[in-house]
Image 1 (tube, rainbow, N blue to C red):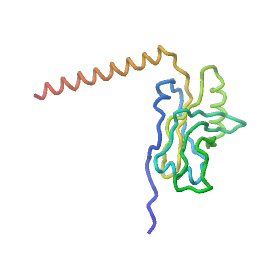
Image 2 (tube, one colour; image 1 turned 90 degrees about the vertical axis):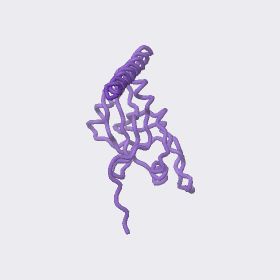
Image 3 (tube, rainbow, N blue to C red; image 1 turned 90 degrees about the horizontal axis):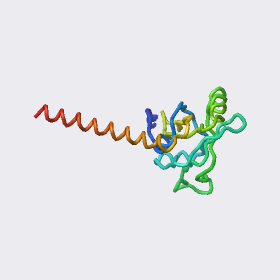
Image 4 (cartoon, rainbow, N blue to C red; image 1 turned 135 degrees about the vertical axis):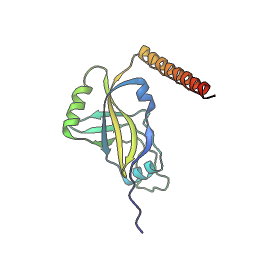
Length: 161
């Protein structure tokens, strides 16, 4: 019997800190060049995007510092955990990212690593660093949103009773 091909999106890792530390200007979905043991390790849901960043080098985009642990059942064919990985993007996208990322304060960060219809994908973002007061403002807005949601739900509960 053949196994049905995976469909949909299965999240492996997410970089929540990136959304806190940066203003997200534009996002891109791109493929990854991986070895077999990397794919097996990702299918087990093991990866970390915490220190990851993207660098454009000679018309190619490379993903650095993303930690994909070695596959437990791997042998001498195992991969190194923090190797740089090539991203699969169109030339126009690479050129656009390169020109924008050279502006002051801009960088390219990975937001999520996932499988889409059985293929490993990474969502990257062109981002601009936040200042400390921006981070505090974002936290304040998040708290205000929570408080208003709580107040609205409490009012609805009182109406029903």
